[in-house]
Image 1 (cartoon, rainbow, N blue to C red):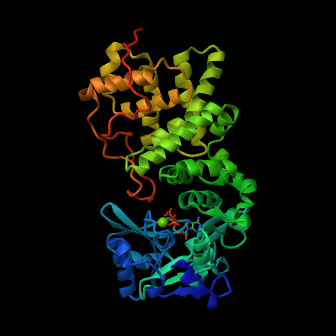
Image 2 (spheres, helix red, strand yellow; image 1 turned 30 degrees about the vertical axis):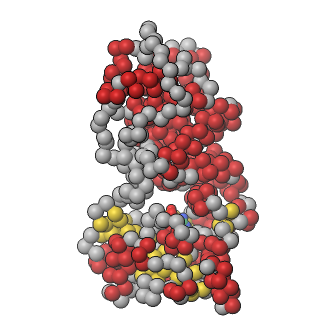
Image 3 (cartoon, rainbow, N blue to C red; image 1 turned 90 degrees about the vertical axis):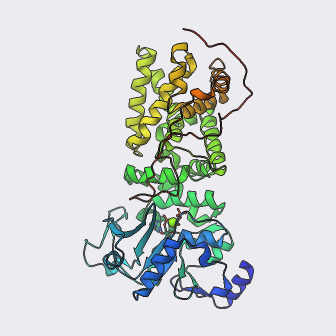
Length: 465
Ligand code: ATP
Ligand code: MG
């Protein structure tokens, strides 16, 4: 299908970056039945009111690849204020990049206005750039041709036109999609300086789509990676969620390390895993398990991923404190506080994840000790399942814990009714998006599929103090 399409396009291929290749409805595979009802509603309402409206970016890209899109983004020539007036169920958001969110219950469609060139800006209210070239404000509106070359990758410069169901492909986006490669539009170094998060996006898409990063696009990343330090920690947290909660965490991690990006997000973890292979193994196993959970449709909490990423730092910091004479338990508590506050300067950790993360850590000692009087409250704890998975992971990676993992596996089989029965309403779900679209709620890593076993259970007596 793609080959036929490409040969047809080549005959008529425009040369300039900002000229579209138009693929008529009969020559592509995207059908309205694959687009969410709410996205269609937004597209049609805008079009009916006399505006151009397109589905853009990942939605078109993923449908062409036969994948199911994470979300549907709409772009229009209506200004944010005009869009807001058209939809009662909408809100204007953002200052740096003004947008409209049209809200349908738990679903939300993001509507952006076509962006234009910064040379056309009327003052700093519309466009602003830092000394290093970073875009601080981007509210200059323009045409679809101008908008296309402001996008990040060529495969994201694809527009599905609701007025005739054609696809407009810019900068050879369709061609790159067919060749399964990521190409940044324009001069890569300049585009990374404008927005260093594009480096993370390159790696995320390469891992998710199994695409290669084209040479020129890949070349500046290692050197420019430290620019990520200028990105607000809250935005980086959002990116961490997208990278590690979408079912391609392991591949993403490998690429992040390869391009010197993981060290910018988790510098202390990078240092620890460089120094000790078992720490790296633990991270890799956790990410592989997380991907498997997502593939099986199970829930996953960022608290678990963070508890794994920061565990090596916790142990190393506690060790240092103990060497300075601090007793073991206070050393662990102080280390936890130090490690978290250090990480917060790189990527924020919202309280709703930080508290469960600390609980997963705190439960480790109880799981190791197995004090009879604490057994019931431990197994009934809301975070028991995640803490138990964490314990298994530690054992899998060489920590000697006197077979505590097997012991707890057995204990759960023998006491099925003692398991915590509650369910928090804020489970992580990549399709739930709130105000910031990817700032998701989360809850404990619990499900009803029984314990996560790594070996067959063997009976052992509870260890006493
Ligand atoms: P996914 O939704 O699967 O994460 P996506 O490509 O749709 O992938 P979004 O973050 O939803 O990513 O953004 C929608 C579109 O907006 C992108 O496809 C791209 O065209 C554009 N875009 C997003 N972020 C940037 C950026 N930092 N620089 C340039 N363009 C961007
Ligand atoms: Mg998207």
